[in-house]
Image (cartoon, rainbow, N blue to C red; front, side):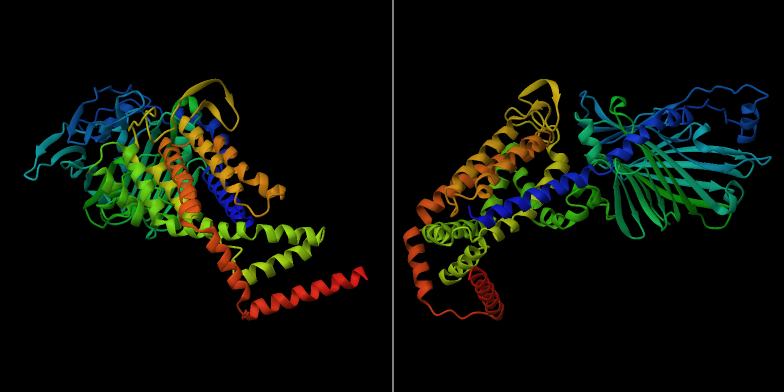
Length: 602
């Protein structure tokens, strides 16, 4: 391992820590928001159900302070397909609970994205008689009408008679084998129910903990949206609000593996605001999000507003089929590292899907994926090792040169570059291949963090490849390590150290303290960072390190002929050198510096 190879590893470490810091930015701001949780919860406490079987005017009169509110039993109706079980309520004519049939939470019950907890609601303001207004989520609609359609879909309709000639219909359609719910909002007398034909929609959703490590789940959770024709996002721990300045197609509360998305199926929302708070971890809530969206409905007495809800996994292919750019919710590369998403989408994801189509064990899928990736980058690996072999062949000459130059470090550097040029050795030969592998590393880091297919999949001692494995629980919390030990992480660290030990033997400069100890730093720091990362990632890294050790041994002992490498170097020294203009200028600068040093000595 030459100096430039070490520089490559250092850059890899710097970029990784930058990525790690980027995903955790703003956590202090989130801590400040904890104080607001109680007041928000109080403000959004469930209100009494108001009887609207006659009309809204009577309901508002009953709800007035002069008369007690009439309590009406909430009626629930269930629609379900192969993927979703949706419980609708006549209160607000809206979904009260949404369960995902194919995914389980940490308590082994189905994942619930809507829980009827008093905070989850979708509502808008309507005008009633006598200059009164009401939120539809607080009103009780009439008995639902449920029908099955010829295409296998199911439709449920709620109607609310506001006043003579004014009514509201909420119609929901659930199709077979689909995570999307169509919501058709129909207003009769829209010109009177809405002020200036403006629909002000309120969507509140509580994202509850779904994974075992709530801190890590919060780091991976975001609010996302499609505004002005572009996808954008914010980590929930980075800030607490966003104001829409352009038209909005959809808004989402995205957790690590699941999303709740509100979509306009016609005219886009014209603007609005998104606010969220991040409660303390003990409340087992990722974020409480409140979205206010505006839409201008067409002028006239009758208005139809087509909307959609998506409740489901962050699966790339599932989201992509809707052709709404929803697949951006799967974090395959974002921000400064957005360029790696193309590696994931074009190479890693297709390979992963190919292997999982005929292999049931995801641990074996990851192993095969690792082998293929290492084969693809093998030319870079070979180039790096060949450069190391050349540098090793020059070690005796470099030692003699260093002995000759003594403490003259600048003179040694100039003579060293001259030797490299004469021998035809590229001093960056070990650095460049390492740098070119960095995008693959970050692509896989994003891929394993966001791949819902790994969720709940066991392999060897790991119960869940999407979370860290635990070989031992610690009786206390260790800063930078946590309260557990991951065996896959230990294996990754040990194999990284073995690579460093083997590579140090190839270093041409055995006496340089930086080169002697630097390769050990990254593996040790890895122990603290990787210990809480998904076991799929640490398993990949372990397999990759084992392959690296095998390749090092095979290439250095059976492929690279060190005798021929030395002969080629000697041959290059004898060849006439044609310098480029840059090399000529560099030589002139080196000669000038050398003359200045000699003059100073005299």
